Amino acid sequence: MATCKVCGKKGLFLKVNKKGECARCVDAKHLVKEQKLLNLIEVIEEEKKALEWGVAPWPYEELANLYHEMKDFRKEVAILERFAVRKYAPGQQAAQLLERLKKAK
Ligand SMILES: [Zn+2]
Image 1: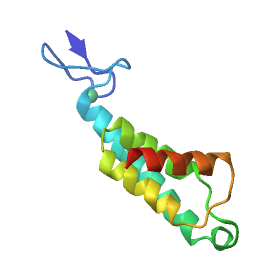
Image 2: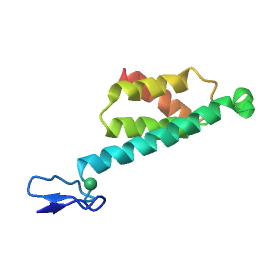
Image 3: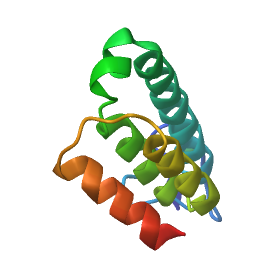
């Protein structure tokens, strides 16, 4: 019988992932992470520094990875597009993200 490590729910038909978490707990964790990253991106985009130097790619990438994990490919493309229209600091990571957007579409 499976038991969720996070909420302690158990049952014959309860499915848990490799980390021992039930689907509801995984969803909840994803939502918390999504909100944190979205808040971070909002802050970054409003920063004066970002207007001059461009935004950092990593929060967009983290969020794209999260959406990918959630199999929400529409949101994955949307966040990559949001990055692509920004002024961003050039570099390998930025180039990889834009490449990924091309493939995801
Ligand atoms: Zn759970």
